[in-house]
Image 1 (tube, rainbow, N blue to C red):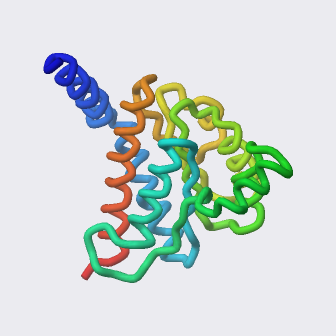
Image 2 (cartoon, helix red, strand yellow):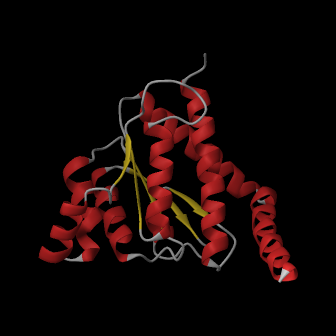
Length: 192
């Protein structure tokens, strides 16, 4: 049993080591930080979307902005698009589950906002559709995916494609990168 535990931990570390050594991925993280800082400083918002565990991660990261990360400071306008269960179930029932995020992007977001979508495959239909609407509206799109990037690769202004095809390892790295973004954005906006 102990060896299995060690193998899982080693696998997680190996993926993060690949992220650490990927200069292009590190440069993309830096570009994302700059884009998010610019959006917040210009009075816009950052919204997140995901499914299942990625929805939980989306909500977690949005809370780091709207709540706090390290600093006691004003709230930043950020939320996870799945948090209104009445809306979610109505749209899924009346339209399609693939429409749940696209309709919110259409109705509540504007050019200058940022949409961050977490999908380990990069092929989640509701996130793909949301990114299509976002691109039409001039909203900045940031995809957090696995190795291939899936369909989100072509729809993302910035792509964090974690070098793995294993869902838990991808999600662990998404939280790592998400926390890096949150920490650096907070530090850049709240300098005191």
